[in-house]
Length: 283
Image (cartoon, rainbow, N blue to C red; front, top):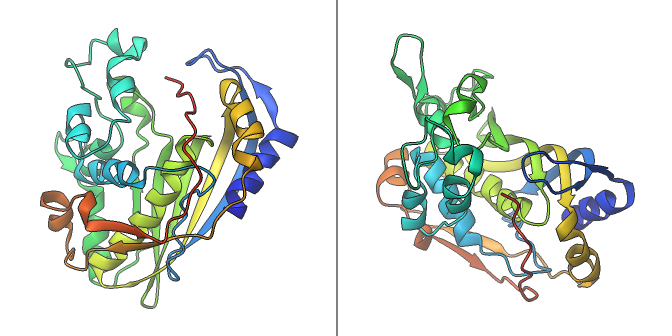
C-alpha cells in the first residue's frame, strides 16, 4: 500500500496533463514507476483503501494464460473487464477483422499461446517457459510477451501489461513485468495481484521457490474524471496491513491451469478494506 499511495501522490504532485486521443479524456501523467512485490513472504499486493475484487483479476490472468480471445470466455470464469473493449470500442466495432459480438481479436494471451510464425505455424511462448523452468533452465530469454506490433490491427486493444520475464537464481524464481501504460486507480489494482499470482503460479508448477516481482511502468496516469475520487476519498483513508494469498497446492502443471483451475483455487486471507469506490472506466 505504501508503494501504491506513493505513486498516486507523485502523479498528483508531479504529473503533467496529457490528452488521450482514444478516450477523449485527459490524464495526469508521470513517466517511469517501479514497484516490488514480496511473493516469498506472501505479502499479497491488494489495495486496502478500497475494496478490490481480486477474483476478477485472477480470472483475467487465467484467461490470458489459456489464450482466450472472446469476452464471453472471460465472463464464464468471472471476469467482465473485456466486455467494453470487445463491444463498445467504436474503432474495433468498425474493424473488418472483428468476428462478431464479444470477439477481442489477437490480443494478450492469444499472442502468448499462439504467436503466428512466418511459416504459418504457432509459437507457444508460455509452454516453452514452463518446460525450461521445470528442467531448471534459464536461458536469459524466458520471456512471455503479448506485444506484437504486426498484429495490432487484429485486436481490440494494444496490451498495456505487455511483457513478463522470468529469472531463475538457484531454486528461486523472479519475475520482471513491464507496462507501457497504467490506469493507476483502476488498472493497477488488477495488475499488482496479477503479477504476484503469475510468479506464484509459475513457481509452483515448475517446482521453484517464488522470490520477488519487479513491476516496471512507463506511463502511469490518473484520468481527469478519476482525480477527485482519488484525492478526496481514497488517499484520505488509512491503509490496512497486507493480506496473504492461498493457492491450491493441487495445481502442479500448465495443463491444470488450462483445464480445471478456477478462482475457487485462490483465497485471500486477512483482507481488511475500506468501502468500494466506483471509479469511471475509460474505453
